[in-house]
Length: 420
Ligand code: FES
Ligand SMILES: [Fe+2]
Image (tube, rainbow, N blue to C red; front, side):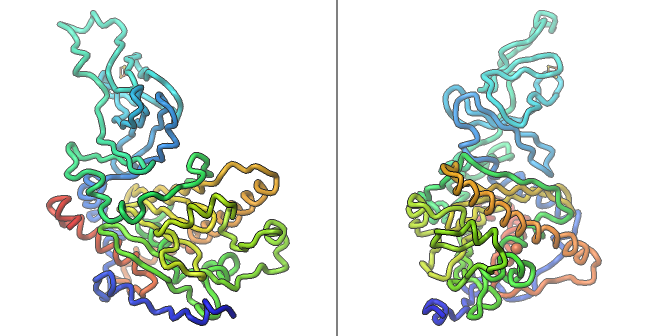
C-alpha cells in the first residue's frame, strides 16, 4: 500500500463546510410540472447559460445554431465581421421563420429560406426582394435579427435570455471565475461529441455526474477500481468547494490501480505509460501546465482522479489527468432532458496516440452509458410518489448544494438576491 492510502481519512464533513443543512432534501423539484415552469422562468430565462466554446467560432463569419431546450429558443451564434461573438434569436423579421437551418457553418450573410430576406452577420437586414412592394415603405433599420445578450469568459460563450440581464457574466460567475481563471484548456477545438434525449428530469441526470457514492457499484466492472480502493472502498470525495452559486468537487483516485491482465486491450493501450488511469487521454509534457493549475486537483493529492466544476445551472467542466470534458443537461420538460457530453483532446500525432484516444473514448463512453442506463429507474422511482425526500450523504454534497441553489433561484425576486 502507498503512504497516500494510509493517510486517507475520508471524512470531510463537506456538507457542513458548505454551510448546508444535513436535513433530507425534497424530491418534488424532480417531478413537478409547476417546478419545471418555475425553473424555466426564474433560472433559464434569468441566468447566464453556457452555449459553446469560442473554438466553435474560430473566424469571422463562423456560426453555430443552438437549441435552448425548454425555452423554445433557437439561438444563432455568430462571430461577426468585427470579431465579436454575438447571439441572435434565429427568427426572421418578416414573418418569423427560422433563418438558419444548418447547425454550423461559415457565412457572411444569412438568407431566410422563406422569402430570402438577407441579414449581415451583425444581424442587420441588408436585402429584401421586391422591397418597393411594402407600403408605404419598409424601415429596414428596425428589422434586424433580435439580439440575445452574449458574453465570453476564457473561451466559454454564454447567453442570457432576459431582455436586460440583471448582472454581468463576471458578476454571475463570482468566485468560480477567480477559482478557475487561467486554466489552459487543451484540445478545446477538437471534441468528440455524444448527445442523447434522456427520460429523466435534467437534475436527475446532472446529479448522476457529480457524486462518487455510486461509483463502486454502478461502475464496478469499468472504473470502480480506479475511483475506489481498499483504503477508500466507497470512493469518498477528497475535496469540495462552494463557489457562490457554483461549486467544485474533487474525486479520489486509487494510487494502487493496476490493469486487470484479462483486459488485454487496456493493457496494450497503456504500454509505456506511467499513468495507468483509464480516464487519461494522454500524459504528454504539455499536460503538465494544464495540471499545474490550482483548481485542478486542488488538494494536490496523489490519490486524485478528477474534478467536477459545476457552473450553474447546467454545465459541468470536468478536469482530469489527461485534459477536460464537459457535460450539459438541458431541461425539455419535467421528465425529459437533452444531454450533451464533449470529450476534448489534442489531435493525435502518432498511431499510438490515436489508439489511446480511441481506447479512452471507448472506455469513457462505456462509463457514461452505465450512468445513463440508470436514470430512467431513478426517475420512475421518484415518480411513484412513494418518497417525498432524499437522504444525501457527504459525497453527495454537490447535489445538495445544487438543489439548494436551484430552490433559492426559484424564490429570489432578483438575480442579485439569488446570487447573494
Ligand atoms: S419569413 Fe423570412 S423572408 Fe419571409
Ligand atoms: Fe457514474
